[in-house]
Structure formats: structure tokens, C-alpha cells
Image (cartoon, rainbow, N blue to C red):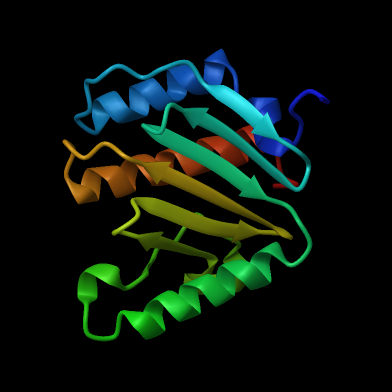
Length: 153
């Protein structure tokens, strides 16, 4: 079996772990954060902190279209349930996409963002931390991953 590869695998290291730990600590999470586990390929790579934090990047063809479909469908199915509606987040995704560049899915604790032809998904599963702090942590982690991947992210 080939070793893990892909964009997120390249940055799934002790430095990222330290940044994730600091981010979670500042958001009020003081539990143990396991070592990161990199898995994946160029098409789908991830860095998993034993489900406390999950970072993945979809780089397969049509990733952005799948992201947009997911957000549209989530909004359609959540018309009468505010908690299930995607919440646009500015400053994370591609500027060209405007408010559609990133969305928080509160029921999944996931921040999805699109840049270029790839989609980054950051899940912060720290149930002891309020929703707003989980979102703040997901935003900070997303920006850290994008920064470490460079301008081509």
C-alpha cells in the first residue's frame, strides 16, 4: 500500500498539531488532543486528531461543484429548521465566491470552504465548547491550513 499523500497530508505534522492545540485551548477546550494521523491521496487527503478535530481536503474533479450542491441541498432541507441551515462565513473561502466561499454546518460542527478547485473541510468536535467557539476554532484552523499550503490552496 502506498504511503499517504495529498495536500493535507503534507501539513499534518507536529507543527500543525501545536497550532491546533493552541487554537482549541484559546476556545476553551482543555481535553487531550491525540497526535495527528495523516491519510489519503491527492484527491482526498486528511489529518485526523482522533475525531476531536478532522481536517480534510477534496481535490478530486468537481470538488467545488459538490461543495456548492451540498450547501444548496442543506439549505433546501433546512428551510424550517434554523439549526440545520448552512451559515455563510466570510474571509475563509475564495473571495470570488463571496459568501458562498465558506459555510458552517452547525449540526455537523463542520466548516467547508472552497479555494481554487479544492474544498477544505474542518470539523471541530469539542462538544464541551459552545458552538460559537467551535466555529472560531474551525476558522482559525482553516486559515492555518491554507497558509501552510501556500497561495495555491
